Length: 351
Ligand code: ATP
Ligand code: MG
Ligand code: MG
Image (cartoon, rainbow, N blue to C red):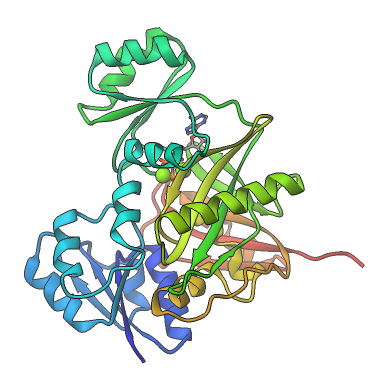
């Protein structure tokens, strides 16, 4: 079969590799860190940095298509890879999702609702933005933030200097605080021919900034559900996207507010592994190699729970549970806040 190159060797790269293998493809992981979780299941691993032009060139020469499991791939590395092979999803999706300011402008340009926001460069721009947007608000680094890292809550304007100090000089964005009833996400996919398939939205609960659980179906009215799916499809089409995309949404009485997008398989889509015939990982592989997409139909309701840090101590009990599918990432060391695995609890409809 063809060889699929995957940039990034974390758990998402691992689960993409497993899905690719199941379809008969060969996988080659590119990852700077030693002993990546994906390395245990991929056919081949290159351990090299994104500044290693020689390694990047050799990697591209060894594969038929390139995809990725994270959005922060340096531009210079992308230039080298793209001169040899297509990268899917494409550069535009990466450019937009690498920077929260660019992303917010893109979403607003599509007519979608986001939190009010302002670019922050110093204390004066922060004071001005706070006067405009109001407190409470959240200051976020424009780049590289994940799991709530690089964020500072501003409850009152008095918190502003400390919040700015927390950014450590990194370019930042102020966001007005959205008073949402709950959070949902849509995992959507677009194929090489422009076909689109969406999974049913999941309802997400975060603990300490990290996703704790995703429940499907989410609490949404029929029209909210339709809105969520349609807005995801608009984003995909606008970006001429190929692959799986995650769209995080806040549910408010005034409608859906887009929080952020992720141009890749997404933690809140892990439930599809046990809720759908074609899960998000297979869906992504299908898209990037030009196969027809799975239809996104759900055969079971699912509650996904992330296993973070010491949650791994519960493994003996989890293994005794009925209808509880365990997915572990093969990470050697358990650290607080580290995603070690997840479980999908299948909710059987009682007769
Ligand atoms: P991820 O791991 O999902 O990439 P992240 O670090 O990019 O996370 P966000 O998704 O921006 O961070 O924020 C993390 C969480 O903080 C959100 O899921 C939400 O619960 C809360 N949050 C973020 N922005 C806002 C906002 N403007 N108003 C209210 N809550 C917010
Ligand atoms: Mg994010
Ligand atoms: Mg998020």
